[in-house]
Amino acid sequence: MAEALASAAPAPEPWALALFRRSVLKQRKYAEIAAALGPTDGLRCLDLGSDNGVVSLLLRRAGGRWASADLTEEAVASIRALVTTDVHRTDGTGLPFGDAEFDRVVVVDMLEHVADDALFAAELARITRPGGRLVVNTPHLKRSALRRVRHALGQTDEKHGHRRPGYTAEGLGALLAPGFALESHHTYSRFFSELVDTAIGAGLGALGKRSSAKGMVVTGDDVGRHRKLFRAYGAIYPGVWLVSRLDALVPASGYMLIATARRRG
Figure 1 (tube, rainbow, N blue to C red):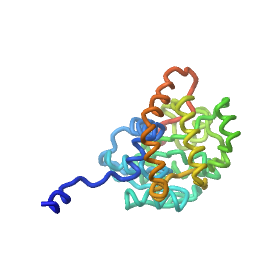
Figure 2 (tube, rainbow, N blue to C red):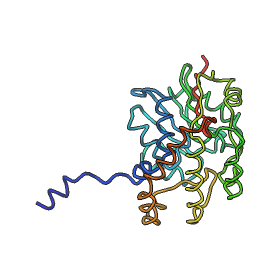
Figure 3 (tube, helix red, strand yellow):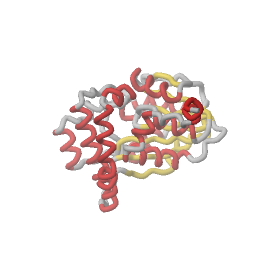
Figure 4 (cartoon, rainbow, N blue to C red):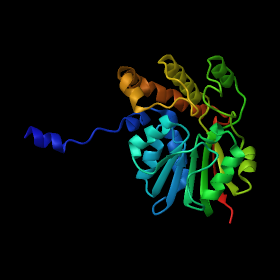
């Protein structure tokens, strides 16, 4: 009887999904990306730079035939642990895919990390079919007091592996213009959400988590090593969520920029 009950018990939730449910920014980011992509059933799709792989996992569950790629071995291994197949490493100068292979391409916090963003944009155009859609999520270039505080805490662009601090909608449109026509854009994640992210970044630094070319990527090994601390964070998460809701009181533009573009025919 005990064996039967054990076999009938649901499988434990992947660590990345459990962490996702305790991250205000990751939840908002995925919601923005999913809305911008639209339905993906039956389409060939690619996600680039999806952090620890949770975005890759959720996008694949939503439908479509997906490939994934990222810049570091740590990030690639974390993605592969969650989705297992069609995961690749790239240095950003060349993407290991065929011409016009993809109907949808989403770039998740990767554009600011590549050395040559114009060359990367040309590669995005090469692998996207005419009429295909590109979604780019990247830091919004803006000056603020919170940005100065982050730098004072050591959370600089260099520390996060950023080659550039971000983009305006106009700058992003100009970068993509040879191959893509910008269709829509807006910002999200205002002061209080970014304040929460700043505190989390400081906490990870205190745990000894080092940055790489992709910044701080929290992996399954990190969760295993600091399980008690992550549980403690889970206990205070309702308060973190409430703080992030104060974004609604802030009229200024957000710290993240998301844009959609159509591949020119």
